[in-house]
Structures are given as C-alpha cells and as structure tokens.
Length: 104
Image (cartoon, rainbow, N blue to C red; front, side, top):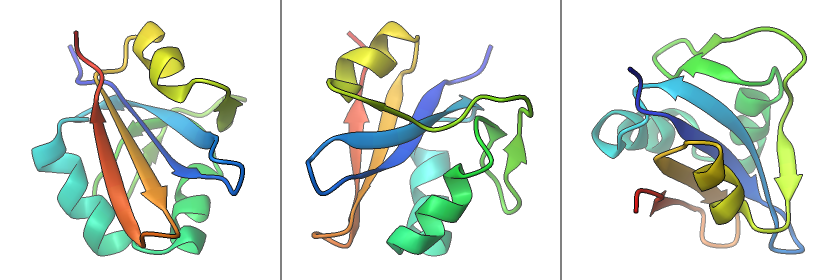
C-alpha cells in the first residue's frame, strides 16, 4: 500500500491547486525532492501539469489518464477525504514548501 499525498501550489486567492500522488508521499522522501528540484512556482506548475503522479522521484512517474490538478475550497478536507496522508503546498510568497499531515 502506498503513502498517498497531494502536491501543489497556493494561488493568489489562497486556494490550492494540487494533484494526487500515489506512492512514497511521506515527508522524508518527498520534501527533499520538492525542495531541491521544484523550488520555484514555474517548476511546480510543470511538475503537476501532466496530472496525477504515480510517484515522485528523480524523474516523476505519472498515472496517465485525464486526471488533472484540482482547485477546491478546502484543500485539507478534500485531500483527507480522498485518502491522502500528506499535502505539500508551494507558497510563492514564502518561496518555500509547506507540509500538512492529513492523518487523523
């Protein structure tokens, strides 16, 4: 079973655009990759543009299909209800990644 997560960025209106990632969503794996390889808004947009991820690695693996980034009113609740355990959000104003643990 994978550690599910969502990866995205904060919009100017404070909403979050994110995609699902099925495997290896724990912070010890994803944060170092996100912080070193996806440290700008443009890089994050390119990462999530193809849609849902199978896993994040040196080369991201995508699930394929038509699943695209989602913008929802309450991202924490949305991704928790979709069985994600972690949410990673790039905040351009802070120029940093934020991690949210979604486990109860």
